[in-house]
Length: 216
Image (tube, rainbow, N blue to C red; front, side):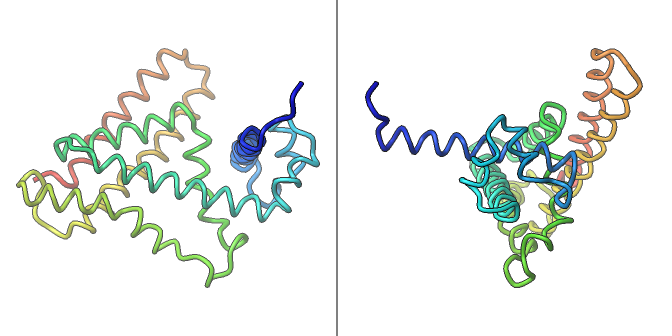
């Protein structure tokens, strides 16, 4: 067997790191930062414990990289989504549906985002990070899309950034409610089809109320 090329080694490295990061999400939403251990994460990833330390020197280093990766991915996805040439209200409605559907499909992702803000003080010093700057950056393309909608008389007049914040606030609260509802329904032993039906009703209400914030 011929030795692996540099490119193959790099691909394996990226794959291993991604497996560890994905495992860290699952461990984190189950245990929280303080109780999460590198051994737990390695076990979740199906890797030898030493490999976790090979890619990340310690837990803090791992979770800092995880946080920055997740937040950047979210920002870039949102930016690309709102750059699409689609009618403005349809864009916002579709975006709300997609991010809320993720709560149903991959609840650990939304739980990570909801919880990580409470642990940032364990990962960064105050002068290292500004969540408010990140939120402004995250909202930038959304705000531009609202400005475009206002100019087209498709969105009501007002402060575009404030409306972007109001829309996202409504979606975020809806995501938390959707996740809570999902857990409650499943704990009651309700048939899967009935759970799906009830969650879809909640989902549609979240979308309607979130888009209503910016409608003319």
